[in-house]
Every structure is written in C-alpha cells, then in structure tokens.
Figure 1 (cartoon, rainbow, N blue to C red):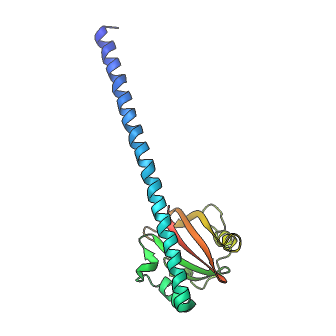
Figure 2: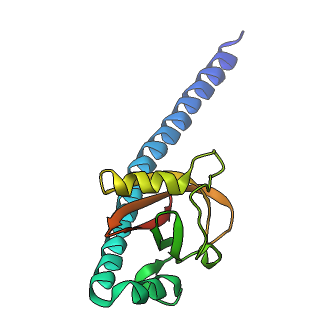
Figure 3: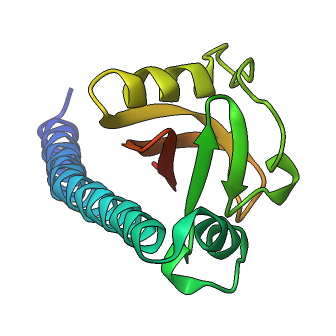
Length: 165
C-alpha cells in the first residue's frame, strides 16, 4: 500500500471520528431539551388539573363538566392537553373525545392491553394523585401515540389531564 493511500485512509478515519463526535454532541444536547420540554408540559398538566378543581369548587360539577367538554374553553384545552372527569368508570367529561361522555369505560384497554380507567381509579383511590402512561389516539392527528395523564381525586370523582409524551 502506498503512503498516499494510507494517508487518505487515515484522513477518512479522522473525518469519520469528527462526524461521529458531532452526532454525539447533537444527540446529547437534544436530550436535555426533551427532558425540559416534558417537565414544562407536566407543569402545564398539573396547572390545568388545578384549574378544573377551582372551577368545580367555584361553580359546581355541572358547570365544570360543561366547560371541560366545550373545546372553546381555552383554560381546559391547550394544543394536545385536555381535561377529563370520571365517576367510577363513567366518563362525565372529555375535552378531546366527546363521544366517550356518558359511557362506562371501566374495561377500556389501550393498544398494549393496559386497563386505563382501572389504573386511573387505582391512582385516585390509592395515593389520590399520580401519573400514568399509555397508548392513546392523539386529538390532533388521531394516530395512536405514547400518552400520559396526571390524575387527582376530586371528591367522589377523579379528574385528569392527558398529554402527548
């Protein structure tokens, strides 16, 4: 092998190392941004749950259900975030899927076989608040995606806010 061929090979290897390093640095810098975005989204989710609770305390159940179901009520609908209210397994309000309102969904499973409402009830009736991840159709794209929800007990009901993970 000639010296020129060896030098070209060494240069190609060095160039490959530079490219790999750049890709690694870009990936590492994107990871904290994704974590920050998720943390910001989860703060927005918790804030929306608090707004539902405040509405319930001020105006009662009927007005809260009406507001959550009304997509023009911005305080309970924000891009992919939406609120929902259940009593036991019955959906009383759902800001993204009004067709679910009035239905007993206690046996509803996601794409992975997870019993969503049962798991939400377990959170509400256990610690009283908590996070859950599951597969759900996006209200924006209608495609099955990774979703999360924050659940809190509210009297005999539980409320939650779903968000795209």
